[in-house]
Length: 194
Image (tube, rainbow, N blue to C red; front, side, top):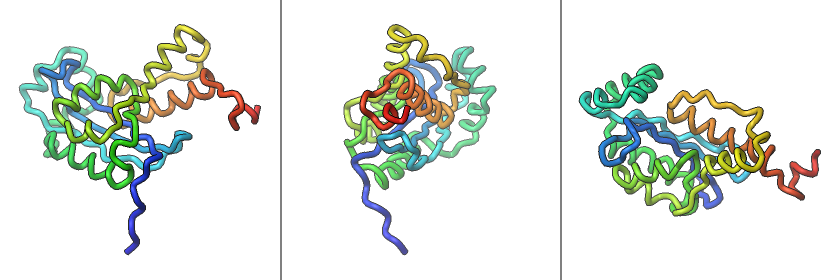
C-alpha cells in the first residue's frame, strides 16, 4: 500500500453550493461540490458531489425560480432520495479536502462565494473554517470586464444548469477565459507565446 501524498499549501479549492433560496436564515443547502486546481488552473482532483437531504416541506416552499430550476435539473428528486444530511455532507467534503490541502491555505474560489460563505457559516462552520479568509471570486472579474473591457466577455457563455459540479467547472473555465482575454499578464509565458 502506498502512502498518500502530504496535503499541499499551493492548491486552490473551488466550491459551489446549491440552496433552496438566497436567505441563509430561512433557506438550506441542497448540494455541495468541490474541486482542486493548481495555480495555473489545471484540475488536480474533484471532490464528492453531494445532494443534501432536506424535508419535503422545505423543498415545497421554494420560490418559483428554485422550484423550476432545481426540478428540471433533477436536483429536487436527488435531494429527496439522498440519505446524506448536512453534517455528513460537511464531513465528506472536509475528508476530501484534508487529504489534499493544508487547512487555511486556500482562498474560497468560485462565483459569488460570499453567498456560499453565508450559508456555510450557518450550516457547515467546520467547512467554512477550512478556507483562508480571502476569496478568489470570478464574479468580481466579470463585473470589472463589463465595465472596463466588455469585449473580454465575448467568446464565453455559461449553460447555467445550477448543478454544483457543472457550475464550479464553469467558474473555473470562466476564470481561464478572463485570464486569456482580460488579464493578459505582461511578461508571462502566455504573453510571450503570442
